[in-house]
Length: 337
Image 1: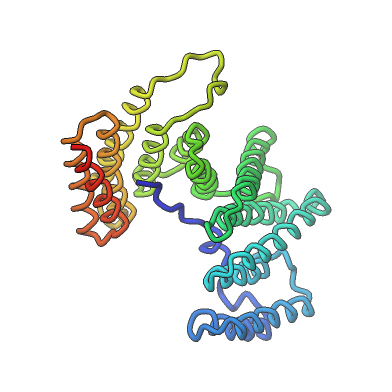
Image 2 (image 1 turned 90 degrees about the vertical axis):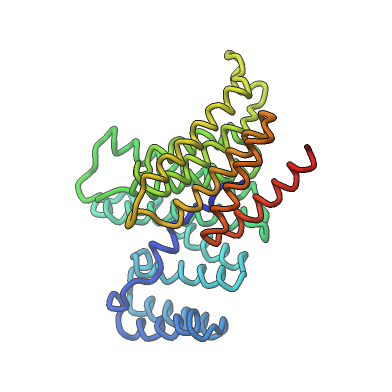
């Protein structure tokens, strides 16, 4: 069973907010654009009104790096993603990212720009994470570009976090990214390495993300499962730790089992309203993972029981991916008996 999908923050956080934040001529164009985006989907008309809104905003002197204007541009990229035009979404986000980087290089260090630098850097990191997701999409399939954007995002956010810890927060800088956003970026890079079977690189990223996740949340259940899967499939190259004896597969598998069992214990303790669908899916995934671990140990009876439990839980909540995966694994197991 693979990782549960990382819920990216960029479109949830930076999409167009209240129309009151825009001058009425711009807001009118945006209302038309969103109508053709969400109600009567017409790409040609939607893009026409987005372009008109941006042109009007430029004429009226709105700050192109304000939350509102960056939100419009990110909305355009979101629309391209919605209609499966992934390369166009990438093109828009790369342009926005490039503009943000140029602004930070030229003006980010100027006195009086401390708070704006924080906002622009945070959005540039979020955009880079989204670009990593797009590049890794099978429709695009540029894994190297995905890694480049995600590594940049993680490096930039950790560098800024360390600078603040070492030097202190300067007057006017404001708050940095939340633990949830930082963890999401680490998790996104971990998923990329996981997809490339580089679990020895994914594991520390999932562990760091876990440390930033609220201890009683359903997403922590998901992260525990991600960590368990990564540990069970450890494959460090021979030269990765030349001065240390390699950790045995049995030890990794034992650790993986413990994390999966911890996820089940946590999942069972979370009650509404804190409980979300992530908890239920995390429970199903943990059961199937434990079945996989039992298979690795040659315990076919336990594996079958875990797969059946995972399938039952998945069916109960309409988690079709879990049902399909459990059926596939049960079919493979029967061939080995």
